[in-house]
Structures are given as structure tokens and as C-alpha cells.
Length: 621
Image 1 (cartoon, rainbow, N blue to C red):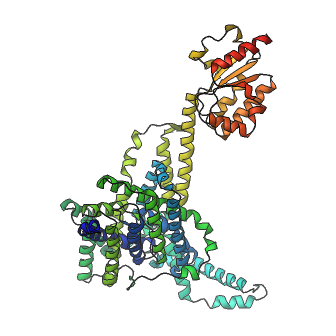
Image 2 (image 1 turned 120 degrees about the vertical axis):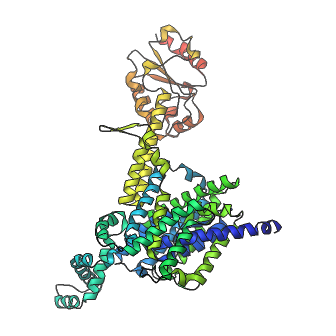
């Protein structure tokens, strides 16, 4: 207890400072996600508190982050499009996916997967992080210039025919659910259609217009229209925010420049009564659980979103553990990766119950906490409590923050999250693959594929495709290297080992010796299978030396079986020398031993094999 209180002052100051840094980012991430500022703030409150309480990194500060928000944004935009922009209708399934992601993180920690997260290839992470930055920057250009596609009268008018079609389809679906046949009740269908009001039509068209500008690709298409109707006040607020964030850092880093920009620009806009667009109203009072998750949603419908939830869980785990490594380096401590994943999962699960965005360990906030004196998990818990107090006391004031200010903050976040280290390394990386006339680095190719697919198609699928490509390229490289070291390409290249120097010259036409000097696996099987064709017709015995073949996978096992069967058909006997435990176990499982290789044809060393050859092979000639 005494030790706990000895760090109380530092933990309190560290937690409050980290909470101050987290506030503008939480609001900004909430707005950009589509769920509103309260979702970002709730996520920051519950994740900071519970991830610290149950996690495995003492100084970690957790909350909504750019990567987690970007994946969430894709999910939210898709569900809002399906549900015609109705947030209340979409919210139960959105939060259910967040809960599933949190539970998956807990599972990753419980089953000890924390130590394996580090094996995610760097090009995949690099391409993904750069894509996150681009998505945030592109999507925030529109609110930074004061353009909202759902309020563009010309664009709404353009979507009116589609809106009418959508409303008519809704009527037909409604009638089908009621068991009404259109052909038999045509009059009733027409009557329902006639009751569609212009307001309903315009509302539907507004939703369609807004959806058309969602995502990076939609925002890019909308930028020309946005530039034709720039709201100069909103643009000045956004630019002012960006300039202060970058400029104030040159003066001092003791005070977070993001918070300074938020306070100054918002204060000017509010104090001078400027006609700006504020963010959505933040609900007052203590957060309450969203029970619609359990009362209005069938968890059986979660299956289509399983991969999205897994991506959130995996991404949150990577993000958090990378921050844990940073914290270890600064504090000279050692985090517990599996416990950290459990804490993050608990925080994300509880946060989702209250309508919060999922998040992860945040590097900048964690470093701020450490530099301000935070030493124990109490600092993260204090950061969460501090944000809760801001919600309860200053919620109404925070609701007056200009939307353009948060857009400016997010643009700086977008630039900050991009992986410049990976981008700068592109020219220096070796060009090891050829695609048509082009020579490329395999790492660069993976990064570009993930970057483009993430930015303009689907974040979730892009990561999966990137992992598959990276794994295939890795397997090919390792296969090529292992095959080269295993020397399984040709009998003509075989060189006698030192213990074969006394092999009888008169038996060299009848006995051939083959060395395997590495694992026999999928990367080297094709060369090994060519062995049977290389044996001349004069051969009667083949000695395969296996003392350096430590491992055999299923592909290698069946390649060995094929070769032995081919040699058996040609009445060539095979002798094994130095067969190790794992390959022997594999061959005994499918009866290669003893069906194709009798146990008396397996020798511990070459000398005993040579004695057998002298006593048996020479008798035949």
C-alpha cells in the first residue's frame, strides 16, 4: 500500500495530462466514425480505465486510435447505407461487432497468442498504416471545407429518382412480409406509393447523397463539387487548427498542441459568435448501457461480420503491443503481452456495451503519461476517470466545438500515422521479383497492394490479402533457400562426404548415394521427386543419407513415398542412413516403414551401411 501511494502524485499528473491529450482525439475519432463525439469519448473513458485495470503494461494509456477508427468507420458506413442512414437501427449490430472484437481479444490473450502478434509482416503493417493516414486525410477534406454531401441540394436532386425507387422497393418488401401479392392487390400498392411525401423522398435522397461521398473513393469523387462551394469560414477554422498544432510544437511540447488548437480556435469561433457548424450534441449525464444490443439484435446475424470483428481484434492487439514495447523501452520494464490483450479486450467489450468506439494502446498518450510522471496502472485509470468528469461537467461546452476544428485535428493525425520510414525505404529495397518487364521488391509490392486495396476498396479484405501474399512470398523464398542448401537438385552435383572416401570403386556403378542436407518440405519436393528419373539403369541400390534432414512435412512425406515407389518398381533397393526421429515418425504413420523400407535397411551410420553393402550388393555381381 505504501508503494502504491508513493507514485500517486506522478500517476495522477500523468493520467490527467494523458486525458487532456486524449480529449480532442476522442471527440474527433467519434465524429469521423459516424457515431458522433460521444462514441469516441465513451470509448476513451471505458477503455482507458479497464485496459489499465486488467492489462499487462503499467503505463499504457488506451483509447480510440486512427487504425481502429478507420476499420470501424468502414463497418459503420456500410451498415448505415443498408439501414438508410438510421443510426438507431444500425447501432445494435455495430456495437455487437465491437463486443465480439473485444471478446476475441480476450480469447487471444487467454490462449497465449500475444507472443505471436509480432510475426505480422512489416510491409502489411506499413501499407495498412499509410492507407489509414490517406483515408483520414481524404475523408476530412470535405468537412474541412464545409461540404456535406447530404446537404447539397443539386446532389440530392440528382438522387431523387433512386430515392423513389428505394421507397417503392421498401413498400414491396413490406407487402411481401404481410403476404400481399402485388398482382392481386395492385390498387393497394399504388395507394401506398401515392402516400409517399416529398419530404420522405428528399430525406431518402439526402441519405443517398451522403452515402455517395463516404469512404476515400467517395470523398475523392465529391472533392470537385466541394471545391465549387467552399465555406471559407469552415476552411479558415480547419487551417487555423492545423497551423497551431504544427506551430505550437516548435514553441514547446510541454502542453499538447492539439489541445491548444482546440481551445484557441473553438474559443475564437464561439466567443465572436461566428456562424460555424458545431459537432453533434454530446449526451449529458453518466453513460448508460445500450440494452438494444440484447433486446433488438439476433446474435446469429453476426456471422457476416466475423472477419471484421477479427480484424478489429487483431489490429487492436498489434497496436497495443507495439505501444507496450515503446513503453518498455522508455521505462526499462517488461510488459505481459497476453495479460495486455485480455485487458484491452475487457476494455473494448465494456466500452461497446456503453456505445463506445473500440480502441487500443495509444503511443503518444502513453509516452505523455510516462513523461508526466505516470508509473503504475493507476495512471491509466485516472485518465479514464478524468475524461468521465469532463463529460459530466463540460459536456454542453464540448458540444459547441466546431466540426471544422476536429477535421483539422484529424488531418494532422492522418499525416502523423503514415509510415514514412517504410515509404522512404522503397528505393533501397532489393528488387527480387519480376512482373512482366518490371522488377520490384516483394516487400514494396505487398505494401502497395495493401495500401491501394485498403484506401480504395476494403480495409478488412486488404489486410487478409496482404497476409496471404506475404505468406506465399515468404514460403517461396524460404523454399528456394532451403532447396538450395538441401542440394536436392541433381545426383551429378553430389560430392562425397569424408566417411565415403573408402567406398569401393567397383560398386559405384551399382550403388548411388544421395545426401539430404535440410528439411524435406513443400519448397523442395519437386526437385526431390526428380531423383528417380536421375538413377541410371545400371543402379541396383540407392543410399539416401538423412542425418541432416531434421524435418519432413506432409508434402515431403508423400514426395518420399512417390520416389520410393518409383524405385521399387525398377527393382532398386533403398537404404536409409541416419534417419532422425521426426521424419521416421512421419514415415511410420503411413507405413513407408516397413512396407517400402524394411527396418533392416535403416542404418545408424554410414559405416554400418557400407558393411551391409559389401556383404550383400557385391554378391549379386
